[in-house]
Length: 513
Image 1: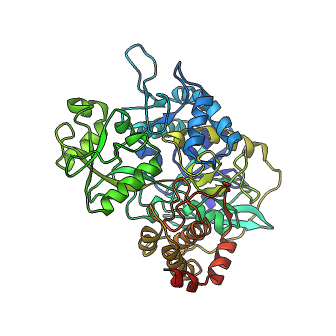
Image 2: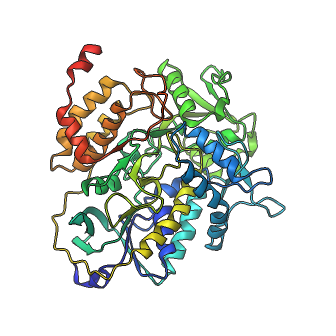
Image 3: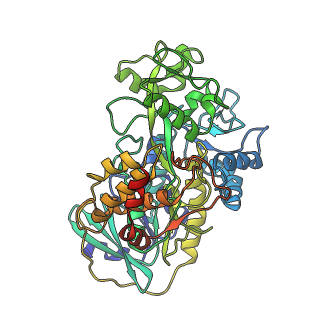
């Protein structure tokens, strides 16, 4: 351990600086805590890109019960009802807390919070900031609050590479800094590292978010859950920029419609139309693209010249691409946006490995089920941070953890894994494609190259997807298009995934292809 960091030993460590990580650190205050960020604070967080906002039952015609019902409907039978009720019941209070922390939410002329509508919500309950810049405003306010908190030691440009586990319990974290490897001795770590979008070519997530937190937990022996459920946002801006720019669901909430190059509204007969659940809209858009069409989001009839005022960030990147949404439709296509799966946690955010917690997108709480309801993710991250911090604070131990130096793995790089995942774990999956992915990913996952950790995460996702022989929510199998009679959550460890890959026989798939 670097001498100048010795004083940080045995403090709880928060890995990740998006909404989940920042809020967890703030909730732990005034207890001393280390906040570790792989980049400058908040710079690479998916949270900063969030346009939609935060969902909470704040309207006079709304209630947590209605919000819960919408969430469970979108989750397609996979939601944990108690978790749904617990998180969404706290949602209105968390909005108040965020305002006290300095977040400037959008308000109406009369001073009340402006509430937007998004897909599969039965009421207007989406709170925004800066129109379509909610995530950026949240990160701004929370970073300022963290920097002002003397009990939070912020370590920027420290990338966690491995968890140290001794006698089945967390004993530290190995990190790479600008000056070399560092080992932090601690028996309390929370992973708040975000999602897996960077494993795909077409994603709205930062390209550096490719499942590092899942790899850390998996290498430590933790159970992961529901890894096969990957949400594709149906309306990412169809252009060369990566990560892809998001054309927020709130645009459809204002009345925008999807059309093709002929100007035909091809979702007119779909129940719910453009505001059907994301998984359904994404599949329909993908099918239309597969038939050789192009797809556009048309805002001319609903917003017209008001588009730039309502959605300034989207209008700005449209202008950069030479498109004026007030006069012409916006080209869109599906892109990976959110991972419903993650580290399996209990109602306090604890993983199956003692001393390890998880919060935010990297965790699988059971809130989202098979398909996340729009704008529930930031709400989940902020609410969950409260009970994760309380649990970590309650777990304070007098035992002094000491750990020796541990080898530093190479910087992870998805490399060829992106090609495999993009081809096999897309909007529509098949047994043949998943089987081929397993054969290619397994050798990479057990190797020592830079793509070993991304391959390990992708392998676990693929094994989970192959085992789920049904179509439910965001997981669609063209060879199993029907839904099973009973909904079941899936759990998997890296050890079991590697064993399944070693025993995998591709011959039955080849014969059925």
